[in-house]
Image (tube, rainbow, N blue to C red):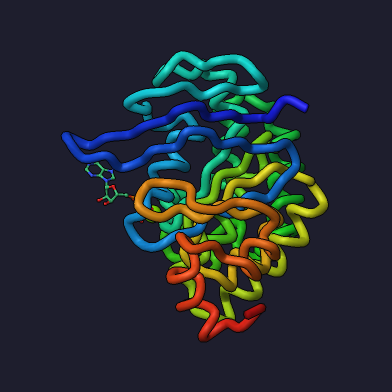
Length: 247
Ligand SMILES: Nc1ncnc2c1ncn2[C@@H]1O[C@H](COP(=O)(O)OP(=O)(O)O)[C@@H](O)[C@H]1O
Ligand SMILES: [Mg+2]
């Protein structure tokens, strides 16, 4: 089957410095892909390239087998994607307004917006916050709004960059549980960047480990975590000391 997204010979440089070097990389429809690696490995840069938010220095990116002009993805394609970052970047307005934004921009009729926002508020357990100003939420609440805002447009691919990293542990696990349930119902393809082995282990079914701008290992998440290779073991074994999923 043709992959949803395919990268070929992708490079990314900042000045003289090579930040990424990805000979080939694919996103398959329906998968929950994790991209994990140490700080500065190039995870966020890779995510931005896959989401057509950043232009590669070289190489090509294909969507459903078709090359997309570098740095010039058409609006209709970009509208198939949603992105949620660590900072929720909510706007000054109610929670309802924030969650509705994607639909408002797409000129969806008001009655349909109301119906959908009501449903997504419920799914994320934040109906009681609908009328609150989004700038005055707790971290966990804000991230729920952020994820609901990303999901409501029913994206073909959901891109997530460390959305749980700033949350305290109990808040994080509650949100991750709810989120996992929601995404398993919608079946949305997801690309999830995290440095955190617990999050990756809990959420993803395929995993790519990136170190120094290169994908050093990829495969089904349990297999990668159980059998690190010579390039990924020093990073993974540090985590496994404190989170012994497998040895
Ligand atoms: N536009 C840029 N200019 C200069 N350096 C950059 C730029 N974007 C990223 N980098 C550098 O590239 C490396 C990878 O960054 P990033 O993708 O944010 O890593 P990660 O998300 O894995 O922590 C870092 O060393 C970062 O400083
Ligand atoms: Mg990052």
